[in-house]
Image 1 (cartoon, one colour):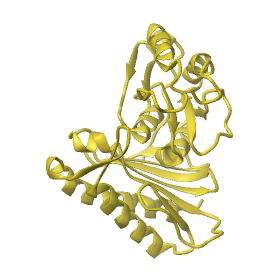
Image 2 (tube, one colour):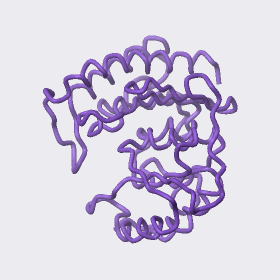
Image 3 (cartoon, rainbow, N blue to C red):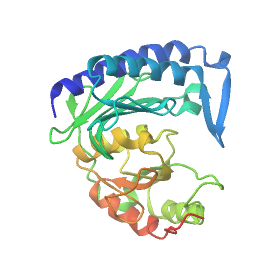
Length: 265
């Protein structure tokens, strides 16, 4: 994977962060729409995605684009795609909480490189296959805690109408009895980044979309973490459940998540 791609992704995420922060400071004045249950959209989502698309397509028009807000565009049959969530954690964004900008480069449904930028903290997570993962250019690894009583685990609260919600709170209760603490970041990308740098030992949620987690998958794997679906499979579909973490925490989480029904409720 050429360093040129990753450098472009980092520069684009930083530029998008500047624009996002212009909206962030006036978030309480923005018009908000509902795309679905607890799924919000505001002007910042669309404007930030437009900036990202223009910068990436200008540099590499041969690469297709897949954005959270605008969908798929670019040359048909392109071998590579930019996979972008312009603001992951829109509810966080509108509430004055940390949000992320997530950009991945993928071949099919395999992320090859990714960046996750948190403008409110000026933290840039980045990785490319075989090159390791970094936070603000410094190498990072997962935290290799092996005692479940010391695990700090991230998750998201399920919505009743969503797939795989059946029994979700029972699984969460079992987890809470086992670990030190459970945290909800409000952003899939941010949660994966926090596992990658050792702030969380593991994270599970489902379902989420590929755009939410594509960059986080490659960053976490390059940091030494494990990413599977709820049942331990690494070859999972684009709308996924996922169980992630440092190896010991991932194994412990699988004992809980694999009890989820394989057929959506």
